[in-house]
Image (tube, rainbow, N blue to C red; front, side, top):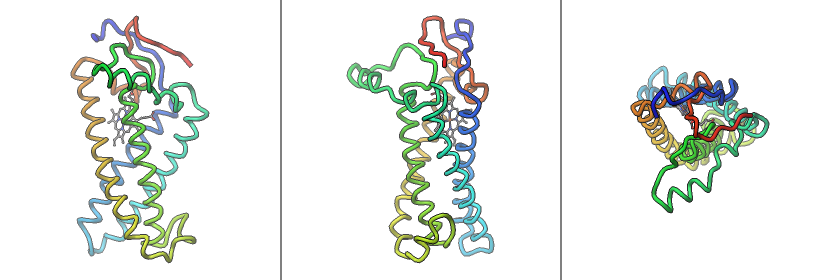
Length: 207
Ligand code: HEM
């Protein structure tokens, strides 16, 4: 769709956008600290890097919990309903085609990826808090799980598996944004400005 044929609509509210960036920056920092800690294993900075990783993990936890509350109490484009499009998914699978029109709010196909990503983030938070307690005797679960040493082995594998899944989501998410940009569709800017550029015939729902 060319720029000239589209008009801006205010869609994503400031809190939703702030949470997007808190979550995205937390994840990038969690990836960086985990890789640096592995790199400097047994070195003088290893413990500091894991402590930093745990602190950033709390930020991600707070961001996710706030996003969960906002999905229940926020405007229409922040609600879970805006990520749930089973009719579009069924139609796409049955007829092997992507939706022709753009709607105000989250893209229905991308929403599948967001639901997947939130599931992976929940897995990372639960296993991460468990690891902080069992391996470092710190965090909200430390009093309960602080002396359960075997938990470290049980939670380590899914935490690492989730890390791989998260990298896959990030690669796909960024590739999709670059693809839209390349087609002349101003999608990426919407998580900064809150505006979406939609054509006259597209589905627009205001809150
Ligand atoms: C580690 C990096 C990132 C992660 C983990 C991430 C994660 C997510 C998630 C979970 C959503 C759904 C948001 C919601 O609940 O409302 C989302 C949507 C979105 N993200 Fe990101 N994001 C990342 C980087 C970026 C970057 C660099 C941009 C562009 C500058 C971007 C632009 C967008 C846009 C435009 C949407 C909404 C798209 C739509 O209309 O469906 N993201 N992202």
